[in-house]
Length: 305
Image (cartoon, rainbow, N blue to C red; front, side):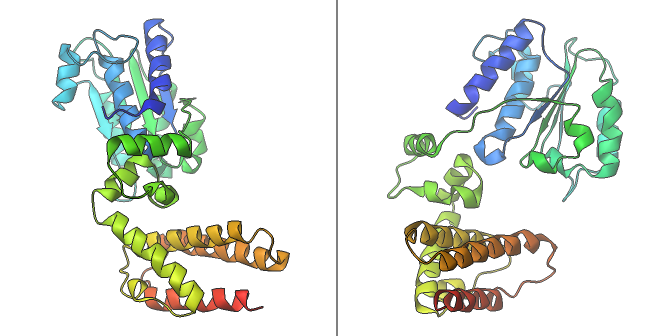
């Protein structure tokens, strides 16, 4: 597992529960994949099946660990969304598998990633298994946005407490992973977590984010949309709007002593930007050029009042 020091306390606590026979049957891991939520869920699954579990985690050498590393453990089930949702047929198939006898003679473990994507039908199909999971069965539900998980599901799971790293810890971790020319942690709210920052830096996404930040700063200052924001495609609009929000937020921080009305207008404008970003998922088509030009004009009108 990629070394994420902020996960270790949760791993230690889970190991203690297993070693003292206090392990529960269903856990909710409310942590974004960008902070290691998926990695944590899969490591807990590995610990649940490990034959020589130590204090620090799964041994990595026993037969169970080797089977997991080879993605071939017959008693480990992994469920992810089929498209935008986790569908009822997927859940029914999983629940049926969990009724069978463990082939390795130990536990049966199911990992459900992005569990907030359970729809009402698939959530209902999972309820009975959550309530009566059977002997030696553990369900691990990971959610990027746990508040979106259907309440009947979250209420039947133990919350696995994970302390997210602060910005200083993230900066230190990023510095240990990669040699950066600047501090990329500014884009955390855009990409979702330190692992996502690292992924963005290793692709072209981070350079695009830098371009959006520079473009928005110049556009809001001049009142004219910069070239870097003119050809943003539909897949990039969300990133561009999130970066705009950060630029406005930074302006708010700098204008602590400015007119309270201007600050209030800026705060409302920032909220509007994030509402637009949230609605993007249900917009059939987005004219990014018109959208960005409109936001640039609106910002300048606010600042000229």
